[in-house]
Length: 315
Length: 255
Ligand SMILES: Nc1ncnc2c1ncn2[C@@H]1O[C@H](COP(=O)(O)OP(=O)(O)OP(=O)(O)O)[C@@H](O)[C@H]1O
Ligand SMILES: [Mg+2]
View 1 (spheres, protein in one colour):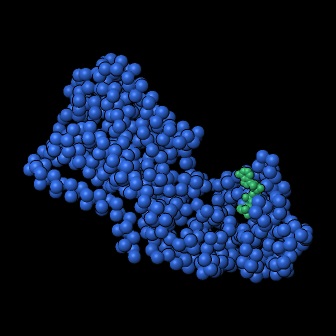
View 2: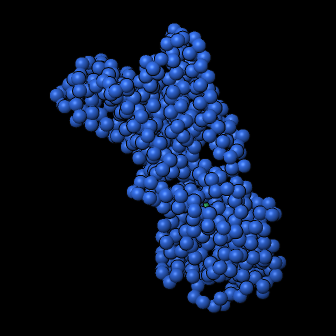
View 3: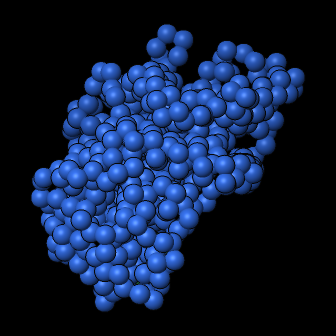
């Protein structure tokens, strides 16, 4: 009984791991290059931005919300860093300003959602548009190029066998894992989504938790923005569009329920890897990127339908 | 069971509450003692849930006072109500289905190891002991509450209220959506809590059940207390008559 229930609980993650494994086997049969360390590092590198956004999204979805603003906030953070550096600011303060901008968006998202009780979808759809507009205004619509080596290091440097983006993604993964599994904040993120009213009645400061979750999400976005900008050595105002979709897909693939109350950092990680391997495989098979976007959309839809059917079946 | 003649643990004096034009409570007077089960009965909309909510701190009354253990309050907040010793088991149980049993029992009162970490080991251990003391049968402690039966979920909610250290436990329709067997288990549990010296207030629509477990019955109608009687001094039909308004036996049985 006990064993069965425990297995049942991690079933989505097991299933996804199986799918990922199948994908890896299939792709390594079509290409020898696929199984090389070089390609694996490549997949991790390209997934790092998506992992960062998905970690934040895991907490947001766990709390029963959604954050559509993260892709555009990531782009805006990068733009703020770039503008600051171009006007003579040192690298660290410039990066700090980028994070501060993101934090401001998280704060606005959280305040509007918790105090004014506006639907998270609508709220973050609006701030998503605000972030994009701000990025376009700051750059005049054109990318900002050419940064110092210190800054570029965050995108293209290397640390032993890995690089800063992969390292950053893993640090956030571990922090996310720790927060969700071992802290009050993680428990309350899940409780908010599971039964926010029950949490409120215990006298817990529900608004504080909700606001801090959205702040955490946009801070993850700022880290993603740093990597995106440093990697390309350019801050593009239109970067990061639809990245929120990737993050949502990874979280839901990882077994989270869109209703909230259920989420897993490990699942999110496997979800990101699956999407990364898929992208990598489709590129290797020379499938045009337009199709990749189409596939991501279909995967999200299927994942959400499966998660919905699962939660219906459990009731 | 005899009614203890000690000081009341809880005294409600002239509590009023309006929702817009609806006078949900028109001046409620009520006393509850430890070691005693007080049943509150009344028709739909009589104000039962509303008076309970003022006691648990979910809503603030417009006027009147609430005296808990000698301390006078004009209104309670969820935290002050808990600190004063009033724990409520809500009709909806207020459980988080996706969390496990210990996580639910300790919701809002978690133990922590260092500054940031939850002490799950200690909470699981204490939850286990608590369920044992209350003779609550749960298949295993890691079960998510959403996987439990109605009676088991109710038991977890009760265990949480007991764990909160409440001297007075309030139940809003504890057996409303429950099978016969589970109802018996829950009623037994509630009775044993009173025998252990806790005060109990139970809201129920089930008159037969009220007569099985209560020491006193408080009848409410249209926001007023229209009867306050000792259970063994009254016939079920009288209580039903008071509920429907066929007779008014105001204040009968009040000490
Ligand atoms: N939040 C609210 N807003 C407006 N009116 C309310 C609200 N809550 C309760 N009322 C009204 O107050 C009155 C008392 O309601 P209450 O819920 O206390 O009744 P009750 O005795 O618990 O009934 P039931 O047996 O149906 O649970 C009713 O007329 C109800 O419509
Ligand atoms: Mg009611």
